[in-house]
Image: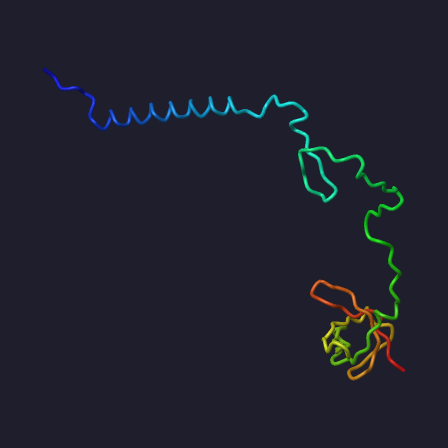
Length: 151
């Protein structure tokens, strides 16, 4: 008389596999029974009340507010153009190398050191000169442009 080829471990694995398959089939049937598909259009509609909350009931037509299309603004309202004098700063040239063509200006208000290139000058400057200038954003930070000597 020979022994069975199936061991206890093999039997347990087979039982678990069959149990998982049965549970998966049960979940599939539950999903089909509780499916949202095929609902009517009324069941899928949502409404927004006067406070902006989403509800399933339609709004009361007597509470409806009339809004004129001209009153609706899209985007930012028109602002006055900035005064060009606001962008002009004053400072002192702290360093300028004429052979290399660049230097630095110390801003009087913020005490920042701002890079200046010879292309941004309207007239020649040297160290210690008081100047007016505007700034623009360069690759490495602020650059002074339209640099003029103060009288």
